[in-house]
Image (cartoon, rainbow, N blue to C red):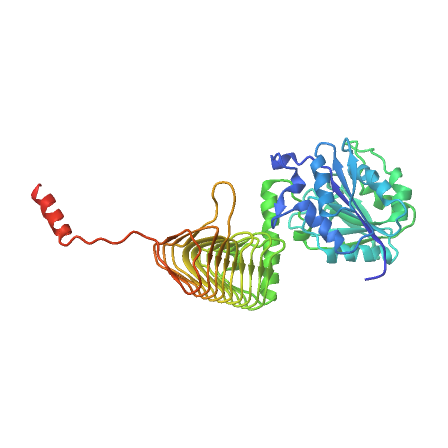
Length: 448
């Protein structure tokens, strides 16, 4: 892009009452990441010199969260709320000494992309004082219209309630997202008045001021999905659907296959390798990394997990934080893994829980095996060596080490370490009473 300094002002002072939630609106999540973080990250992708977030005094936790995303974020407080221009004015001290393009973003418009923001900034670099992001919704309704001049430049932003019948025919609408030359913003923001029905200071009036000064104003058009504002739970779900669509497409374009993409759900940081196959109803929570040539079968849930190349997961598997499947490992149906390393080629095929464990290469963990890792006060580790065979329905009471090549007989409760190549069996001896079943049946049937 053209060499230009960029700063961002993120407006996050709204009360969000339509969300009907004790959680501030902009901290509600899309793709397991708060909306505000989506917006900050989009701005950060352009390496801005400054980022300021404007919050209300009713929700200091928004400021705390913003600085946790980036310690360099400046926090400004708007109290009481008096319109968008008034909100931006509170951020001006954070822009002291800055010269370049100031992006005006909204924390409840989380889907705007870095590419679009870059295009806005480039309009400022090319000489415009204001650049506005427009979109063409199916129903323009109450949106402000972007009126262009004969040269295609932005002539005015006309609010729907003030528009003439001809202006209401305009389909290009104002998203609110814009870029403003810093010097012009600092010089003219103070001249926006509140002479309107709500008595608020509207940033959209900056266009009229620029035109009055003979400055040029530009407009670019983005996709309507990119500028969806979230004010309710319904709109939050709509934004989530758009986000998931983007993630699914990106995964498939990178070489993953999905039998039914609409049933697969990603988090914002999910990493999927090439030639990965994903079945239906698979959920990726935060912190998942999937290597190449992995198969994730139906109804599996993964969070905070790493799956190396050639491994297989599911169906109906759950990988919890700290699960680490190495190359060629297999975790099958109704298996839960938590904070455990599953070695190369190891198999945990069904009905098993492994927590706080280390499983050696080529080990086979039988159905119904449990690592008993919690004693009511602390967690303890189970170490299972290379090539170990654990028989079905075994309980391994940690802390415990089972040496390379050892066997554990089915139905055992193992409480002591097992040396390499030994067989450990810990269960009651089987007793057989000849003919007992026949005598029992005869006695009971005869009594009827």
